[in-house]
Image (cartoon, rainbow, N blue to C red):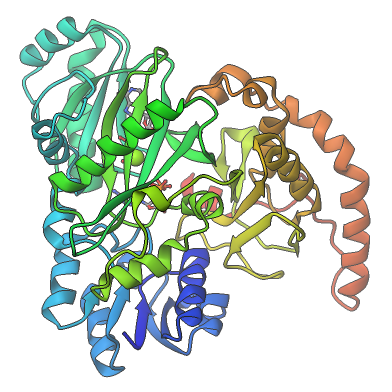
Length: 494
Ligand code: ADP
Ligand code: ADP
Ligand code: MG
């Protein structure tokens, strides 16, 4: 493989290109009008313009991307996450065009891309599943029967859902029928597939997932777990590896089950098997993500393995250069997703301009980002600015280092999830490891951020003065985390 096109944008496109460069592989970027000046475009050896900002007119144009590959003699496509990464038809077309798709075969993606088909495949391999319906369900009477058996609350899930979307909790019998109708119509409009199913809503759930890696020679390993229980809107915001609560025995058992899930769909490359764990530490398979995961860096930090390089090697047909026994956990790593969101307003996206953007540095700190100071965070895509990752010899060192890195990270111009992350890092429940996916509801109130803010106030004021002086000639305008103009994103949503 001599040249790879990265069919993505932002931090993940850059992160992939860096590994490719280390391997001596040339890179091709793609971009929409909104990303013309993005770091990922500048970093690549070549760049291809796709179209206007909306994804459907740019990053989702599979045929245009394949045509560009042919023209530029590209021999591999890395899809990153989101966009085309879990689109089996695209993967198939790429392979048919004689280009290698850096990911699993279309067949595995189709099985695992559909939550129901995934559970079906896993069931045959004896993987524990959350109690619920075995297939898609439409009949409310039938649904009620099953819900009474498993007990309320239940969760209605869209089989084609993702990114925390397409899920409804039903607390009581009277609400079931109406919620089912809404779930089905929402699934049809959002995912083009109205299939929904019902699962027991696991009490005090923790989200624990396992990274797997498989080559084309029949070798399959797991790279331990990631704890992703700090979430908002059923989507992760803080992750860590390893989990604070797994015994060595449970870790190996979950790892083995994850490898079995990979085997059940004849998996190739890097993938993630997601489990939900209840209070008694029973774990159940939820879904498999057939791509590189947003939070993959924490696994890289504790194993020393570059997952993107491994993906490329597997796509080239090479065998894994290590076995399960060679893999060991070293230290601890925490990731904070720095989203342009306002934690005070229910984590509403808060798009704007990065007036001041200064990254933290130093031992044990990694920042995966795709923006520079002065750039706008576009409204068209996921509002993630960066991933702030720390590593320490143990969990406490990684946690304290995260607090230090958050202090050193200066972002002015929009709200971010960093102040929320600082709150989490200092919270007793996080420190003790005794938390679940309801962390935000149970422990967080916007007022808690006020104390944190006043501490930082003086610091930010200094930055603003410096910025105004640096911008000399431009209109002096006070911009900080709380006092700023209206965001386009919000106006668009209203
Ligand atoms: P991860 O699963 O890697 O932990 P997310 O759930 O945040 O992370 O998803 C990663 C990205 O992929 C996000 O940009 C999210 O919006 C997007 N995404 C995930 N699943 C889907 C889907 N089914 N449809 C559209 N976008 C999705
Ligand atoms: P997505 O494709 O959107 O990532 P998942 O099935 O992985 O969907 O679920 C996303 C999140 O929703 C989980 O991390 C967890 O917080 C919550 N969740 C999913 N299934 C259950 C369940 N049966 N009980 C409790 N919480 C659940
Ligand atoms: Mg998931």
